[in-house]
Amino acid sequence: MNGKSRVAAHVRALPFSGIRKFFDIVAQRKDVISFGVGEPDFDAPRAVRDVAKTSLERGETHYTSNRGDPELRRAISRYVARQFGATYDPDTEILVTVGVSEAIDVALRAVVNPGDEVIYHEPCFVSYRPTIVMAGGVPVCVETRREDQFRLTRAMLEKAVTPKTRVLMLNFPCNPTGAVLLQKDVEDIADFCVKHDLLLLTDEIYAELTYDSKHFSFIAVPGMKERTIFLHGMSKAWAMTGFRIGYACSPAEISENLMKLHQYAIMSAPTTGQMAAAEALDHGDEAVAEMRAEYNRRRNYLIAAFAEMGIPCHTPAGAFYAFPYIGDLGISAEEFALRFLEEKGVAVVPGDAFGACGAGFLRCAYATSMDNVREGMKRMAEFVAEIRAEKKQ
Amino acid sequence: MDELLNILKTNARTSDADIAKMIRATPAEVAARIAAYEKAGTIRGYRALVNADHLPDDGVTAVIEVKVQPEKEGGFDRIAKRISAFDEVVNMYLMSGKYDLLLFVEGKTLRAVASFVSERLATLDGVLSTGTHFMLKTYKLDGVLMDVDKTDDRMRVCP
Image 1 (cartoon, rainbow over the protein chains, first blue to last red):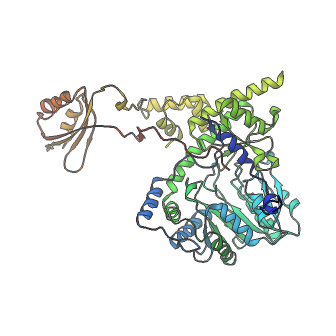
Image 2: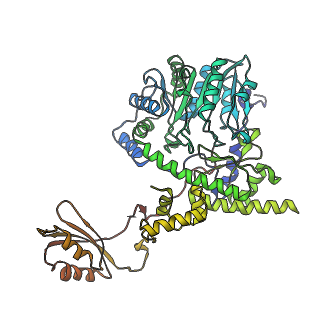
Image 3: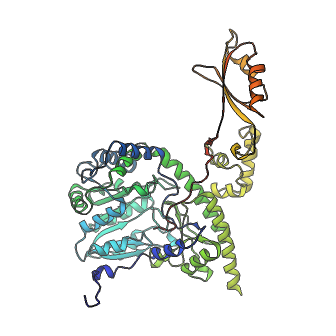
């Protein structure tokens, strides 16, 4: 190959996730209190695990239908109807995927023509921008701000939209900011989509983990179901990350094309996980409520602790992330994170791993025990005091 | 249930200041609410969940099934009150099924419990029979697993 790389140029051009670099550094240390983990510290509910075991014992070790097990699709349809207020046909409008990550990938590849613009918001989950690029789209970033509680407003979107815009891609409640949209925001943004004839890709994986108000979904807005790909999955609220089950609900024409891509790339989502997911959707509300109550205690604790330290932090109303601002301390988020790990043994993730406008912020995931939250915040208070003393000298 | 009680039931040593942070109140409000619960008798006490298996020879616990003769007046209550008054009896329940009363009895030695059963319990008027089972090992106590080797094997940082 004459020293040339065998990797395709467009893949080589794709940056590695900023979080990956930090993961390698943290992995070298022992006894770390980590606020860096974007997955629940709870194990999947016992009843869910039991169903998975029974399924294996019964020898259910084969492919399912490409779309997903019919019983699971019916369970998804029932759950989405009662929780989010829109009814999807399990035979033609629901696709079971390998987590929401796969669903995002097939959805973008299915609807983006080369050169189409896709509007998304930052700070956001690390895969959004690369996935748009790999689908041949042009990512158009809208930056959300602390002053707005990291909510997205219609005014911001109006500035970003062009005649080439085809898709709006959202994630509320948001990883990494913990921001949520209120019903009014959702209705305004839905109206914006209709006005500009955009397709909405909405990743509502954290919907159940909303603390101060009930989650209001885009698919509850009349007229939106027809132009929306609704993505959800079992990983977060049901603590089922390792089962790798997500799903996409969309109009039949889109859904069958998502299915086509999914079929060629994946065949079918893991069977054991699908059986477990059906149990979780039908009987998991209580387990979800218990986990949410515990996350809420930790969240409240973090907010109070940051306030005591004089570290500004908007009230994260969803997911399990707080996003405090440390820009006033006179060091970068990366330096803060590296030194905090080195000097106090606590891991947080620099906010700019989730987009340039995350500079000066830290993502603190509170998917860790209350004992860790308490000890981690005690050490952070010490560390912040030390940094302030240093800067005064 | 009140969040405050949920927190104390999980860890009664959580400080007022920490509880205040968790439920968005002030430490003074937390202290006042706890005092009110104590006064009302809703909170009846605080104590440690001790894994007796970790202690050197800390005595024995037996679970005893007791069949009794109910009385025309008052049913099981009179005999149940007499039995529950013994210091050796730490927990006691009226049960449905093949026996009537279920007792948790603590004693210093196996012999001490045996003599309590044969000399003081079985000889009471109204006690028809007893069945004694000695506890061998505690796996779970009040919802808490005694085995504490669960580790967090998640990736330390992930998106």
